[in-house]
Length: 483
Image (cartoon, rainbow, N blue to C red; front, side, top):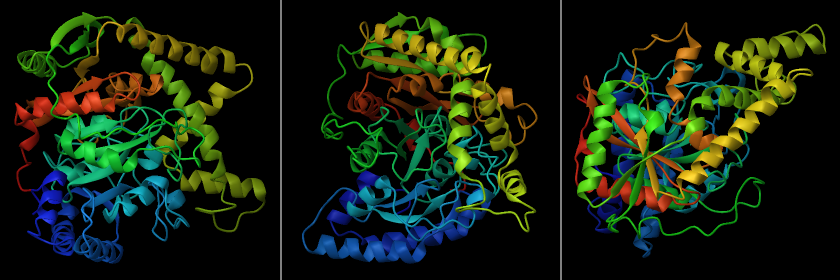
């Protein structure tokens, strides 16, 4: 049962081949057996999962037949889950049990999804390797000596290791798409505002977006269907009708205009990944797509702009963790200042502290105009580049990452080298566009992803292209050895 996709599980449950409870017990046993190798979960919710599975079986017996009814999933550990530890991968929130469900959690529970647990992540979603978690690093099931990508590495590793068929994740600068590429999964970052951020612990409020991680585009369509929609509790949520994402999966892509930016093939790209990208272009051409070279001239400024804006917003968002109201508090503070300093110094890890300091500096008097304001102007130029490009093409295609997954610890002493791994993904967050990564081959036994970008609210188009590609390739069906 662990090899079934979300879509196959829905059909199996509908045909009464197995029950949601049987499936849940099978996967919980599998997690207990295999997860110690990869460390993809922070908390397991066995009791809740079995309750939800039994309830799903009752609903199915009464005639309900939703695609997610009885489907087992995991939640990245920054989605608040009532009564369950929601840690954000940090010592700061190690003792925090959320008093309410995030909108995403509530919507998926209402659809009948079964929550197996909360998945590991880089602390406060800051990282590209899943090495900064207070609960220990996550390992890539394709090679246990390599990183699974971050910050949603726990969700990605769990799905790749077939511990569960799909999981929720979040993407601030590539944290769904990059782990998807590193672990041979399909990952979708929706348009900013498409999925509610209410109850999703914030890193950078103008960039964060929740989305699905699964093995196929078909599964991402099913999970996104359950996650998407307007939420009046979230001021950044957009009141836009949610289409049926599964309905257009089998549409022909004959005549679809695909743009390939010339800036993507610079010296920083591993030539073997470039080859995989060109292979995927040829495959899509065979299906009738029309390929056109385009230019995104301001792409080169994305990394510096992002690493000013995101830390600036993080320094503001994380100021609430002060040892007073909730979360970690230092022992025996001398006074209020000591309480603040030691609670934050002891509760936050090195990477979080680094980004808070960078952000506070960029926002400080005398530097705001030179850094933050200038970064926002670059952000606008990047968005304008995309708007111009989408006048000529329907979808933009390129690499998801410049390199395959690196060895654990390889970039620990060089944070900038890790930041540069986000080169291809962060522009979608700066512009608020939807982006998808899909499996496109292997380099040295490690998975490679290809990224697709589309205009606002065109997630269905991305899923359609990826599904057609997956009907004609088998990369997404490969399983890591031992799992």
